[in-house]
Image 1 (cartoon, rainbow, N blue to C red):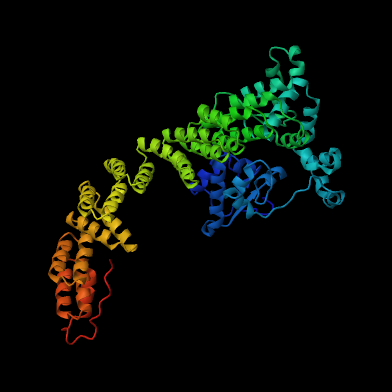
Image 2 (spheres, rainbow, N blue to C red):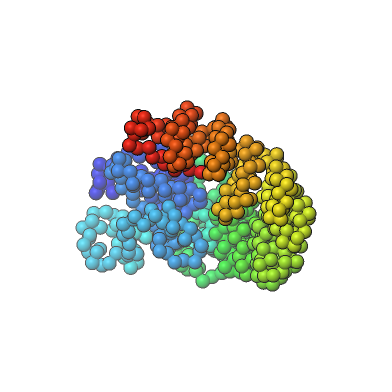
Length: 596
Protein backbone atom coordinates (compact mmCIF):
# COMPACT_ATOMS: atom_id res chain seq x y z
CA UNK A 1 0.00 0.00 0.00
CA UNK A 2 2.84 2.38 0.86
CA UNK A 3 4.49 1.66 -2.47
CA UNK A 4 1.37 2.68 -4.42
CA UNK A 5 0.14 5.47 -2.13
CA UNK A 6 3.27 6.65 -0.26
CA UNK A 7 1.71 9.80 1.23
CA UNK A 8 -1.46 8.14 2.50
CA UNK A 9 -1.97 7.08 6.11
CA UNK A 10 -3.06 3.52 6.91
CA UNK A 11 -5.64 3.02 9.66
CA UNK A 12 -6.29 -0.51 10.94
CA UNK A 13 -9.13 -0.31 13.55
CA UNK A 14 -8.87 -2.91 16.31
CA UNK A 15 -9.95 -1.68 19.76
CA UNK A 16 -12.15 -1.82 21.82
CA UNK A 17 -13.31 -4.43 19.30
CA UNK A 18 -13.24 -4.26 15.54
CA UNK A 19 -16.80 -3.06 14.74
CA UNK A 20 -16.81 -0.65 17.70
CA UNK A 21 -13.44 0.77 16.63
CA UNK A 22 -14.92 1.67 13.24
CA UNK A 23 -18.13 3.12 14.69
CA UNK A 24 -16.43 5.27 17.32
CA UNK A 25 -13.71 6.61 15.02
CA UNK A 26 -16.16 7.61 12.30
CA UNK A 27 -18.59 9.08 14.82
CA UNK A 28 -15.81 11.23 16.31
CA UNK A 29 -14.42 12.26 12.88
CA UNK A 30 -10.97 10.82 13.60
CA UNK A 31 -10.37 9.85 9.99
CA UNK A 32 -8.59 12.41 7.79
CA UNK A 33 -8.51 12.74 3.99
CA UNK A 34 -5.90 10.67 2.18
CA UNK A 35 -6.41 7.70 4.51
CA UNK A 36 -6.58 3.99 3.81
CA UNK A 37 -9.06 2.09 5.99
CA UNK A 38 -7.46 -1.37 6.20
CA UNK A 39 -9.99 -4.06 7.21
CA UNK A 40 -8.06 -7.29 7.24
CA UNK A 41 -10.42 -10.27 7.76
CA UNK A 42 -13.35 -7.96 6.99
CA UNK A 43 -15.95 -10.49 8.15
CA UNK A 44 -14.77 -9.83 11.70
CA UNK A 45 -16.01 -6.25 11.30
CA UNK A 46 -19.36 -7.11 9.65
CA UNK A 47 -20.60 -10.32 11.25
CA UNK A 48 -20.84 -9.45 14.98
CA UNK A 49 -24.33 -8.40 16.07
CA UNK A 50 -25.59 -5.78 16.60
CA UNK A 51 -22.44 -3.74 15.85
CA UNK A 52 -21.52 -5.33 12.50
CA UNK A 53 -24.42 -3.75 10.54
CA UNK A 54 -23.84 -0.47 12.38
CA UNK A 55 -20.20 -0.47 11.28
CA UNK A 56 -21.29 -1.24 7.71
CA UNK A 57 -23.74 1.67 7.77
CA UNK A 58 -21.04 4.00 9.12
CA UNK A 59 -18.66 2.96 6.33
CA UNK A 60 -21.39 3.56 3.73
CA UNK A 61 -21.89 7.08 5.08
CA UNK A 62 -18.14 7.65 4.92
CA UNK A 63 -17.98 6.59 1.26
CA UNK A 64 -21.02 8.72 0.39
CA UNK A 65 -19.65 11.89 2.02
CA UNK A 66 -17.36 13.44 -0.61
CA UNK A 67 -16.29 16.14 1.86
CA UNK A 68 -14.39 13.47 3.84
CA UNK A 69 -12.30 12.23 0.93
CA UNK A 70 -10.36 11.01 -0.69
CA UNK A 71 -10.63 7.75 1.31
CA UNK A 72 -9.72 4.20 0.26
CA UNK A 73 -11.60 1.37 1.97
CA UNK A 74 -9.56 -1.82 1.52
CA UNK A 75 -10.45 -5.20 2.98
CA UNK A 76 -9.84 -8.93 2.71
CA UNK A 77 -12.33 -11.74 3.21
CA UNK A 78 -12.27 -15.51 2.84
CA UNK A 79 -14.50 -16.80 0.00
CA UNK A 80 -16.86 -18.65 2.35
CA UNK A 81 -17.64 -15.44 4.20
CA UNK A 82 -18.11 -13.53 0.95
CA UNK A 83 -20.68 -16.12 -0.16
CA UNK A 84 -22.37 -15.79 3.21
CA UNK A 85 -22.55 -12.00 3.32
CA UNK A 86 -22.64 -10.64 -0.22
CA UNK A 87 -25.97 -9.83 -1.95
CA UNK A 88 -27.21 -12.66 -4.11
CA UNK A 89 -25.76 -15.34 -1.87
CA UNK A 90 -28.01 -18.39 -1.70
CA UNK A 91 -26.73 -20.17 1.37
CA UNK A 92 -28.93 -21.95 3.85
CA UNK A 93 -27.85 -20.44 7.17
CA UNK A 94 -30.63 -17.90 7.62
CA UNK A 95 -28.04 -15.20 8.20
CA UNK A 96 -27.54 -14.40 4.54
CA UNK A 97 -30.83 -12.68 3.81
CA UNK A 98 -30.74 -10.82 7.10
CA UNK A 99 -27.45 -9.12 6.28
CA UNK A 100 -27.38 -9.15 2.47
CA UNK A 101 -30.54 -7.07 2.30
CA UNK A 102 -29.32 -4.71 5.02
CA UNK A 103 -26.38 -2.41 5.63
CA UNK A 104 -23.77 -5.17 5.24
CA UNK A 105 -25.10 -6.29 1.86
CA UNK A 106 -25.45 -2.69 0.64
CA UNK A 107 -21.83 -1.97 1.58
CA UNK A 108 -20.48 -5.08 -0.15
CA UNK A 109 -22.61 -4.37 -3.22
CA UNK A 110 -20.44 -1.28 -3.82
CA UNK A 111 -17.19 -3.25 -3.62
CA UNK A 112 -14.75 -3.76 -6.47
CA UNK A 113 -13.76 -7.37 -5.85
CA UNK A 114 -10.39 -8.91 -6.65
CA UNK A 115 -10.29 -12.69 -6.36
CA UNK A 116 -6.88 -13.74 -5.08
CA UNK A 117 -5.77 -17.13 -6.45
CA UNK A 118 -4.70 -19.76 -3.95
CA UNK A 119 -1.26 -19.97 -5.53
CA UNK A 120 1.12 -18.22 -7.92
CA UNK A 121 1.55 -19.80 -11.34
CA UNK A 122 5.07 -20.64 -12.58
CA UNK A 123 4.79 -17.82 -15.13
CA UNK A 124 3.94 -15.30 -12.40
CA UNK A 125 6.83 -16.51 -10.25
CA UNK A 126 9.26 -16.21 -13.16
CA UNK A 127 8.07 -12.64 -13.77
CA UNK A 128 9.08 -11.59 -10.23
CA UNK A 129 12.17 -13.77 -9.94
CA UNK A 130 14.39 -10.71 -9.40
CA UNK A 131 12.29 -9.65 -6.39
CA UNK A 132 12.42 -13.17 -4.96
CA UNK A 133 16.23 -13.24 -5.23
CA UNK A 134 16.53 -9.92 -3.37
CA UNK A 135 14.38 -10.97 -0.38
CA UNK A 136 15.58 -13.95 1.70
CA UNK A 137 12.07 -14.56 3.04
CA UNK A 138 10.62 -14.79 -0.44
CA UNK A 139 13.50 -16.97 -1.57
CA UNK A 140 12.87 -19.43 1.26
CA UNK A 141 9.15 -19.47 0.56
CA UNK A 142 9.78 -20.01 -3.14
CA UNK A 143 12.03 -22.93 -2.34
CA UNK A 144 9.83 -24.70 0.21
CA UNK A 145 6.22 -23.73 -0.60
CA UNK A 146 4.27 -26.45 -2.35
CA UNK A 147 2.40 -25.71 -5.59
CA UNK A 148 3.26 -22.02 -5.53
CA UNK A 149 1.45 -21.29 -2.23
CA UNK A 150 3.97 -18.68 -1.16
CA UNK A 151 1.51 -16.46 0.69
CA UNK A 152 0.29 -19.33 2.85
CA UNK A 153 3.87 -20.37 3.59
CA UNK A 154 4.81 -16.86 4.65
CA UNK A 155 1.79 -16.75 6.91
CA UNK A 156 2.91 -19.98 8.59
CA UNK A 157 0.22 -22.10 6.97
CA UNK A 158 2.31 -25.25 6.44
CA UNK A 159 3.54 -25.14 10.01
CA UNK A 160 0.03 -24.62 11.31
CA UNK A 161 -1.37 -27.48 9.31
CA UNK A 162 1.50 -29.75 10.28
CA UNK A 163 0.92 -28.94 13.96
CA UNK A 164 -2.76 -29.75 13.47
CA UNK A 165 -2.13 -33.05 11.70
CA UNK A 166 0.62 -34.16 14.07
CA UNK A 167 -1.13 -33.07 17.27
CA UNK A 168 -1.91 -35.75 19.86
CA UNK A 169 -5.52 -36.88 20.34
CA UNK A 170 -6.44 -34.47 23.18
CA UNK A 171 -5.04 -31.48 21.24
CA UNK A 172 -6.89 -32.51 18.10
CA UNK A 173 -10.08 -32.83 20.13
CA UNK A 174 -9.72 -29.20 21.25
CA UNK A 175 -9.06 -28.05 17.66
CA UNK A 176 -11.98 -30.07 16.26
CA UNK A 177 -14.28 -28.54 18.87
CA UNK A 178 -13.05 -25.04 18.00
CA UNK A 179 -13.38 -25.60 14.24
CA UNK A 180 -16.90 -27.03 14.60
CA UNK A 181 -17.92 -24.16 16.86
CA UNK A 182 -16.91 -21.68 14.18
CA UNK A 183 -18.47 -23.57 11.27
CA UNK A 184 -21.79 -23.92 13.10
CA UNK A 185 -22.08 -20.25 13.99
CA UNK A 186 -20.10 -19.41 17.13
CA UNK A 187 -18.33 -16.05 17.23
CA UNK A 188 -14.57 -15.70 16.83
CA UNK A 189 -13.70 -15.71 20.54
CA UNK A 190 -14.04 -18.97 22.47
CA UNK A 191 -13.79 -19.17 26.24
CA UNK A 192 -11.50 -21.65 27.96
CA UNK A 193 -14.49 -23.20 29.73
CA UNK A 194 -16.26 -23.69 26.40
CA UNK A 195 -13.24 -25.36 24.82
CA UNK A 196 -12.79 -27.73 27.76
CA UNK A 197 -16.41 -28.90 27.89
CA UNK A 198 -16.81 -29.09 24.11
CA UNK A 199 -13.52 -30.96 23.60
CA UNK A 200 -14.43 -33.59 26.20
CA UNK A 201 -16.92 -35.12 23.77
CA UNK A 202 -14.33 -35.25 21.00
CA UNK A 203 -11.96 -37.42 23.00
CA UNK A 204 -14.48 -39.83 24.52
CA UNK A 205 -12.71 -42.76 22.84
CA UNK A 206 -9.58 -42.06 24.94
CA UNK A 207 -11.32 -40.54 27.97
CA UNK A 208 -10.24 -43.21 30.46
CA UNK A 209 -6.58 -42.82 29.53
CA UNK A 210 -6.43 -39.03 29.93
CA UNK A 211 -4.51 -37.42 32.75
CA UNK A 212 -6.26 -35.10 35.17
CA UNK A 213 -4.66 -32.04 33.59
CA UNK A 214 -4.99 -33.18 29.98
CA UNK A 215 -6.82 -30.06 28.90
CA UNK A 216 -4.39 -27.56 30.39
CA UNK A 217 -1.38 -29.38 28.90
CA UNK A 218 -2.95 -29.61 25.44
CA UNK A 219 -4.18 -26.00 25.47
CA UNK A 220 -0.74 -24.67 26.40
CA UNK A 221 0.80 -26.75 23.63
CA UNK A 222 -1.63 -25.42 21.01
CA UNK A 223 -1.21 -21.78 22.10
CA UNK A 224 2.60 -21.96 22.09
CA UNK A 225 4.41 -19.96 19.40
CA UNK A 226 6.74 -21.71 16.98
CA UNK A 227 9.60 -19.68 15.51
CA UNK A 228 7.72 -16.49 16.38
CA UNK A 229 4.62 -17.70 14.53
CA UNK A 230 1.36 -18.02 16.51
CA UNK A 231 0.07 -21.49 17.27
CA UNK A 232 -3.19 -23.09 16.08
CA UNK A 233 -4.99 -21.46 19.01
CA UNK A 234 -4.17 -17.86 19.86
CA UNK A 235 -4.92 -16.34 23.24
CA UNK A 236 -6.86 -13.10 22.96
CA UNK A 237 -5.52 -10.36 25.18
CA UNK A 238 -8.15 -7.94 26.42
CA UNK A 239 -6.97 -4.40 25.74
CA UNK A 240 -6.87 -1.78 28.51
CA UNK A 241 -9.81 0.14 27.03
CA UNK A 242 -11.98 -2.97 26.57
CA UNK A 243 -14.66 -4.14 28.97
CA UNK A 244 -14.11 -7.87 29.68
CA UNK A 245 -17.23 -9.91 28.90
CA UNK A 246 -16.09 -12.84 31.03
CA UNK A 247 -13.48 -13.67 33.61
CA UNK A 248 -12.48 -16.71 31.57
CA UNK A 249 -9.52 -16.69 29.17
CA UNK A 250 -10.43 -16.19 25.50
CA UNK A 251 -8.92 -17.94 22.47
CA UNK A 252 -9.41 -17.88 18.71
CA UNK A 253 -8.36 -20.15 15.87
CA UNK A 254 -5.61 -19.17 13.47
CA UNK A 255 -7.30 -17.92 10.30
CA UNK A 256 -5.76 -20.43 7.93
CA UNK A 257 -6.52 -23.36 10.21
CA UNK A 258 -10.12 -22.23 10.60
CA UNK A 259 -10.60 -21.91 6.85
CA UNK A 260 -9.00 -25.23 5.94
CA UNK A 261 -10.56 -26.97 8.94
CA UNK A 262 -14.02 -25.99 7.74
CA UNK A 263 -13.33 -27.73 4.44
CA UNK A 264 -11.78 -30.81 6.06
CA UNK A 265 -14.69 -31.29 8.49
CA UNK A 266 -17.61 -30.11 6.38
CA UNK A 267 -19.22 -33.56 6.24
CA UNK A 268 -18.40 -34.58 9.80
CA UNK A 269 -21.22 -34.10 12.36
CA UNK A 270 -20.32 -32.38 15.62
CA UNK A 271 -20.30 -34.08 19.00
CA UNK A 272 -23.16 -33.49 21.43
CA UNK A 273 -20.73 -31.79 23.80
CA UNK A 274 -20.48 -28.89 21.34
CA UNK A 275 -24.16 -27.97 21.87
CA UNK A 276 -23.99 -28.50 25.63
CA UNK A 277 -20.92 -26.27 25.93
CA UNK A 278 -22.50 -23.64 23.67
CA UNK A 279 -25.63 -23.44 25.82
CA UNK A 280 -23.54 -23.15 28.97
CA UNK A 281 -20.70 -20.84 27.96
CA UNK A 282 -21.71 -18.79 24.91
CA UNK A 283 -22.52 -15.23 25.96
CA UNK A 284 -23.69 -13.43 22.84
CA UNK A 285 -27.29 -13.87 21.60
CA UNK A 286 -26.17 -13.84 17.96
CA UNK A 287 -23.83 -16.79 18.54
CA UNK A 288 -26.57 -18.68 20.36
CA UNK A 289 -29.16 -18.05 17.63
CA UNK A 290 -26.82 -19.23 14.85
CA UNK A 291 -25.78 -22.31 16.84
CA UNK A 292 -29.43 -23.05 17.65
CA UNK A 293 -30.43 -22.91 13.99
CA UNK A 294 -27.54 -25.17 13.07
CA UNK A 295 -28.61 -27.64 15.76
CA UNK A 296 -32.20 -27.46 14.55
CA UNK A 297 -31.14 -28.26 10.98
CA UNK A 298 -29.38 -31.33 12.33
CA UNK A 299 -32.62 -32.18 14.25
CA UNK A 300 -30.75 -31.95 17.51
CA UNK A 301 -32.89 -31.38 20.61
CA UNK A 302 -30.24 -29.11 22.13
CA UNK A 303 -31.49 -26.35 19.82
CA UNK A 304 -34.19 -25.60 22.42
CA UNK A 305 -31.57 -25.02 25.14
CA UNK A 306 -29.69 -22.67 22.82
CA UNK A 307 -32.80 -20.67 21.91
CA UNK A 308 -33.69 -20.40 25.60
CA UNK A 309 -30.17 -19.18 26.46
CA UNK A 310 -30.42 -16.58 23.68
CA UNK A 311 -33.69 -15.39 25.20
CA UNK A 312 -32.05 -15.15 28.63
CA UNK A 313 -29.28 -13.06 27.06
CA UNK A 314 -31.82 -10.57 25.74
CA UNK A 315 -32.87 -11.95 22.33
CA UNK A 316 -36.30 -13.61 22.51
CA UNK A 317 -36.62 -13.69 18.71
CA UNK A 318 -34.98 -17.09 18.51
CA UNK A 319 -37.33 -18.94 20.84
CA UNK A 320 -40.29 -17.19 19.20
CA UNK A 321 -39.01 -18.31 15.79
CA UNK A 322 -38.73 -21.90 17.05
CA UNK A 323 -42.27 -21.81 18.46
CA UNK A 324 -43.68 -20.44 15.21
CA UNK A 325 -41.82 -23.14 13.30
CA UNK A 326 -43.46 -25.77 15.50
CA UNK A 327 -46.86 -24.13 14.98
CA UNK A 328 -46.30 -24.14 11.21
CA UNK A 329 -45.53 -27.85 11.36
CA UNK A 330 -48.77 -28.35 13.38
CA UNK A 331 -46.81 -29.71 16.35
CA UNK A 332 -49.22 -27.88 18.62
CA UNK A 333 -48.61 -29.72 21.89
CA UNK A 334 -44.87 -29.10 21.66
CA UNK A 335 -45.49 -25.47 20.73
CA UNK A 336 -47.76 -25.01 23.76
CA UNK A 337 -45.11 -26.53 26.03
CA UNK A 338 -42.44 -24.20 24.66
CA UNK A 339 -44.69 -21.17 25.18
CA UNK A 340 -45.52 -22.22 28.73
CA UNK A 341 -41.92 -22.96 29.66
CA UNK A 342 -40.01 -20.23 27.86
CA UNK A 343 -42.11 -17.51 26.23
CA UNK A 344 -45.56 -16.84 27.75
CA UNK A 345 -47.13 -14.63 25.09
CA UNK A 346 -50.69 -13.78 24.16
CA UNK A 347 -49.75 -13.33 20.54
CA UNK A 348 -48.16 -16.78 20.33
CA UNK A 349 -51.24 -18.37 21.89
CA UNK A 350 -53.41 -16.45 19.39
CA UNK A 351 -51.33 -17.88 16.52
CA UNK A 352 -51.59 -21.33 18.10
CA UNK A 353 -55.38 -20.92 18.26
CA UNK A 354 -55.55 -20.03 14.57
CA UNK A 355 -53.46 -23.09 13.65
CA UNK A 356 -55.66 -25.37 15.77
CA UNK A 357 -58.78 -23.92 14.15
CA UNK A 358 -57.53 -24.53 10.60
CA UNK A 359 -56.61 -28.08 11.66
CA UNK A 360 -60.18 -28.68 12.84
CA UNK A 361 -59.26 -28.86 16.52
CA UNK A 362 -62.12 -26.68 17.72
CA UNK A 363 -61.82 -27.25 21.46
CA UNK A 364 -58.05 -26.71 21.40
CA UNK A 365 -58.52 -23.56 19.32
CA UNK A 366 -61.00 -22.21 21.88
CA UNK A 367 -58.70 -23.08 24.81
CA UNK A 368 -55.68 -21.41 23.17
CA UNK A 369 -57.76 -18.33 22.30
CA UNK A 370 -58.84 -17.93 25.92
CA UNK A 371 -55.26 -18.31 27.12
CA UNK A 372 -54.21 -15.61 24.65
CA UNK A 373 -56.98 -13.34 25.94
CA UNK A 374 -55.84 -13.79 29.54
CA UNK A 375 -52.36 -12.69 28.41
CA UNK A 376 -53.83 -9.43 27.02
CA UNK A 377 -54.16 -10.47 23.38
CA UNK A 378 -57.86 -10.65 22.39
CA UNK A 379 -57.18 -11.17 18.66
CA UNK A 380 -57.24 -14.97 18.86
CA UNK A 381 -60.65 -15.04 20.52
CA UNK A 382 -62.08 -12.41 18.18
CA UNK A 383 -60.78 -14.16 15.07
CA UNK A 384 -62.06 -17.55 16.17
CA UNK A 385 -65.50 -16.22 17.11
CA UNK A 386 -65.72 -14.29 13.83
CA UNK A 387 -64.84 -17.43 11.84
CA UNK A 388 -67.53 -19.41 13.64
CA UNK A 389 -70.12 -16.70 13.00
CA UNK A 390 -69.11 -16.38 9.33
CA UNK A 391 -69.49 -20.14 8.85
CA UNK A 392 -72.98 -20.13 10.35
CA UNK A 393 -72.00 -21.56 13.75
CA UNK A 394 -73.52 -18.63 15.61
CA UNK A 395 -74.18 -20.50 18.85
CA UNK A 396 -70.49 -21.40 19.16
CA UNK A 397 -69.54 -17.84 18.25
CA UNK A 398 -71.98 -16.50 20.85
CA UNK A 399 -70.44 -18.70 23.54
CA UNK A 400 -67.02 -17.25 22.79
CA UNK A 401 -68.32 -13.69 22.59
CA UNK A 402 -70.14 -14.12 25.92
CA UNK A 403 -66.84 -15.21 27.48
CA UNK A 404 -65.12 -12.18 25.99
CA UNK A 405 -67.90 -9.81 27.08
CA UNK A 406 -67.57 -11.08 30.65
CA UNK A 407 -63.96 -9.95 30.44
CA UNK A 408 -64.97 -6.51 29.08
CA UNK A 409 -63.90 -7.07 25.47
CA UNK A 410 -65.57 -4.31 23.43
CA UNK A 411 -65.63 -6.28 20.18
CA UNK A 412 -67.52 -9.09 21.92
CA UNK A 413 -69.96 -6.64 23.56
CA UNK A 414 -70.61 -4.91 20.23
CA UNK A 415 -71.30 -8.22 18.46
CA UNK A 416 -73.66 -9.38 21.21
CA UNK A 417 -75.48 -6.02 21.15
CA UNK A 418 -76.08 -6.33 17.39
CA UNK A 419 -77.16 -9.95 17.75
CA UNK A 420 -79.66 -9.21 20.53
CA UNK A 421 -81.13 -6.35 18.50
CA UNK A 422 -81.45 -8.63 15.47
CA UNK A 423 -83.25 -11.17 17.70
CA UNK A 424 -85.63 -8.47 19.01
CA UNK A 425 -84.20 -8.77 22.53
CA UNK A 426 -83.74 -5.04 22.98
CA UNK A 427 -83.47 -4.98 26.79
CA UNK A 428 -80.63 -7.49 26.80
CA UNK A 429 -78.90 -5.49 24.08
CA UNK A 430 -79.36 -2.37 26.16
CA UNK A 431 -77.71 -4.02 29.20
CA UNK A 432 -74.68 -4.97 27.12
CA UNK A 433 -74.49 -1.47 25.61
CA UNK A 434 -74.76 0.31 28.97
CA UNK A 435 -71.96 -1.87 30.34
CA UNK A 436 -69.82 -0.83 27.37
CA UNK A 437 -70.66 2.84 27.95
CA UNK A 438 -69.53 2.58 31.57
CA UNK A 439 -66.17 1.36 30.23
CA UNK A 440 -65.91 4.36 27.90
CA UNK A 441 -67.26 2.87 24.64
CA UNK A 442 -70.49 4.58 23.48
CA UNK A 443 -70.95 2.94 20.05
CA UNK A 444 -73.11 0.03 21.23
CA UNK A 445 -75.55 2.26 23.14
CA UNK A 446 -75.95 4.46 20.07
CA UNK A 447 -76.85 1.31 18.12
CA UNK A 448 -79.60 0.59 20.65
CA UNK A 449 -80.81 4.22 20.45
CA UNK A 450 -81.00 3.93 16.64
CA UNK A 451 -83.14 0.84 17.10
CA UNK A 452 -85.57 2.76 19.37
CA UNK A 453 -85.72 5.56 16.82
CA UNK A 454 -86.46 3.15 13.98
CA UNK A 455 -89.48 1.90 15.94
CA UNK A 456 -90.72 5.49 16.46
CA UNK A 457 -89.73 5.70 20.12
CA UNK A 458 -87.93 9.02 19.69
CA UNK A 459 -88.16 9.91 23.39
CA UNK A 460 -86.27 6.81 24.50
CA UNK A 461 -83.75 7.24 21.69
CA UNK A 462 -83.07 10.83 22.77
CA UNK A 463 -82.75 9.65 26.38
CA UNK A 464 -80.00 7.22 25.38
CA UNK A 465 -78.27 9.81 23.17
CA UNK A 466 -78.27 12.24 26.12
CA UNK A 467 -76.78 9.56 28.36
CA UNK A 468 -73.91 9.24 25.88
CA UNK A 469 -73.43 13.02 25.88
CA UNK A 470 -73.57 13.27 29.69
CA UNK A 471 -70.64 10.87 29.98
CA UNK A 472 -68.49 13.10 27.77
CA UNK A 473 -68.90 11.46 24.37
CA UNK A 474 -70.37 14.44 22.52
CA UNK A 475 -67.82 14.13 19.73
CA UNK A 476 -68.85 10.51 19.22
CA UNK A 477 -72.47 11.59 18.79
CA UNK A 478 -71.55 14.16 16.18
CA UNK A 479 -69.28 11.72 14.29
CA UNK A 480 -72.08 9.16 14.31
CA UNK A 481 -74.43 11.83 12.92
CA UNK A 482 -71.98 12.54 10.10
CA UNK A 483 -71.69 8.83 9.37
CA UNK A 484 -75.43 8.06 9.23
CA UNK A 485 -76.00 11.20 7.18
CA UNK A 486 -73.75 9.74 4.46
CA UNK A 487 -76.18 6.83 4.25
CA UNK A 488 -79.15 9.25 3.99
CA UNK A 489 -80.46 8.37 7.43
CA UNK A 490 -81.39 12.01 7.92
CA UNK A 491 -83.87 11.52 10.72
CA UNK A 492 -81.29 9.70 12.86
CA UNK A 493 -78.65 12.29 12.00
CA UNK A 494 -80.97 15.14 13.04
CA UNK A 495 -81.59 13.57 16.46
CA UNK A 496 -77.88 13.05 17.00
CA UNK A 497 -77.00 16.60 15.94
CA UNK A 498 -79.66 18.04 18.25
CA UNK A 499 -78.37 16.14 21.29
CA UNK A 500 -74.77 17.05 20.48
CA UNK A 501 -75.77 20.72 19.98
CA UNK A 502 -77.58 20.81 23.32
CA UNK A 503 -74.36 19.47 24.89
CA UNK A 504 -72.42 22.37 23.34
CA UNK A 505 -70.68 20.79 20.35
CA UNK A 506 -69.80 23.73 18.02
CA UNK A 507 -69.80 21.64 14.84
CA UNK A 508 -73.21 20.21 15.66
CA UNK A 509 -74.50 23.78 16.25
CA UNK A 510 -73.05 24.75 12.86
CA UNK A 511 -74.84 21.86 11.11
CA UNK A 512 -78.16 22.70 12.76
CA UNK A 513 -77.76 26.38 11.88
CA UNK A 514 -77.37 25.59 8.21
CA UNK A 515 -80.17 23.01 8.43
CA UNK A 516 -82.63 25.60 9.81
CA UNK A 517 -81.51 28.14 7.21
CA UNK A 518 -82.36 25.65 4.51
CA UNK A 519 -85.84 25.28 6.01
CA UNK A 520 -86.35 29.05 5.95
CA UNK A 521 -86.05 29.45 9.74
CA UNK A 522 -83.58 32.34 9.52
CA UNK A 523 -83.74 33.65 13.08
CA UNK A 524 -83.22 30.20 14.56
CA UNK A 525 -80.39 29.60 12.12
CA UNK A 526 -78.62 32.80 13.18
CA UNK A 527 -79.08 32.04 16.88
CA UNK A 528 -77.43 28.66 16.42
CA UNK A 529 -74.58 30.14 14.33
CA UNK A 530 -73.88 32.71 17.06
CA UNK A 531 -73.85 29.95 19.68
CA UNK A 532 -71.30 28.04 17.61
CA UNK A 533 -69.18 31.18 17.16
CA UNK A 534 -69.15 31.86 20.88
CA UNK A 535 -67.78 28.34 21.34
CA UNK A 536 -64.92 29.08 18.91
CA UNK A 537 -66.50 28.10 15.59
CA UNK A 538 -66.96 31.45 13.77
CA UNK A 539 -67.00 29.49 10.52
CA UNK A 540 -70.67 28.76 11.25
CA UNK A 541 -71.44 32.47 10.62
CA UNK A 542 -69.38 32.52 7.44
CA UNK A 543 -71.21 29.44 6.13
CA UNK A 544 -74.55 31.05 6.95
CA UNK A 545 -73.42 34.15 5.05
CA UNK A 546 -72.65 31.96 2.05
CA UNK A 547 -76.15 30.49 2.12
CA UNK A 548 -77.74 33.93 2.27
CA UNK A 549 -75.54 35.23 -0.53
CA UNK A 550 -76.75 32.28 -2.60
CA UNK A 551 -80.30 33.43 -1.88
CA UNK A 552 -79.44 36.95 -3.15
CA UNK A 553 -79.15 38.62 0.27
CA UNK A 554 -75.76 40.38 -0.21
CA UNK A 555 -76.23 42.80 2.67
CA UNK A 556 -77.00 39.93 5.04
CA UNK A 557 -73.96 38.05 3.76
CA UNK A 558 -71.74 41.09 4.39
CA UNK A 559 -73.16 41.60 7.89
CA UNK A 560 -72.61 37.98 8.89
CA UNK A 561 -69.12 37.93 7.39
CA UNK A 562 -68.20 41.07 9.36
CA UNK A 563 -69.25 39.30 12.56
CA UNK A 564 -67.40 36.14 11.56
CA UNK A 565 -64.25 38.10 10.69
CA UNK A 566 -64.38 39.97 14.01
CA UNK A 567 -64.39 36.57 15.73
CA UNK A 568 -61.34 35.33 13.82
CA UNK A 569 -62.67 33.50 10.76
CA UNK A 570 -60.05 33.87 7.99
CA UNK A 571 -62.40 32.85 5.18
CA UNK A 572 -64.71 35.71 6.13
CA UNK A 573 -61.78 38.12 6.17
CA UNK A 574 -60.71 36.98 2.70
CA UNK A 575 -64.21 37.51 1.33
CA UNK A 576 -64.41 41.00 2.84
CA UNK A 577 -61.01 41.88 1.39
CA UNK A 578 -62.16 40.85 -2.07
CA UNK A 579 -65.39 42.80 -1.63
CA UNK A 580 -64.09 45.91 0.12
CA UNK A 581 -66.23 48.28 -2.02
CA UNK A 582 -69.95 48.58 -1.58
CA UNK A 583 -71.94 45.56 -2.61
CA UNK A 584 -73.57 47.38 -5.49
CA UNK A 585 -70.21 48.35 -7.01
CA UNK A 586 -68.50 45.02 -6.50
CA UNK A 587 -67.91 42.73 -9.44
CA UNK A 588 -66.93 39.76 -7.25
CA UNK A 589 -69.44 38.89 -4.58
CA UNK A 590 -68.88 35.18 -4.96
CA UNK A 591 -68.00 33.14 -1.89
CA UNK A 592 -66.43 29.70 -1.77
CA UNK A 593 -68.87 27.12 -0.43
CA UNK A 594 -68.45 26.54 3.31
CA UNK A 595 -66.82 23.31 4.41
CA UNK A 596 -68.98 21.25 6.70
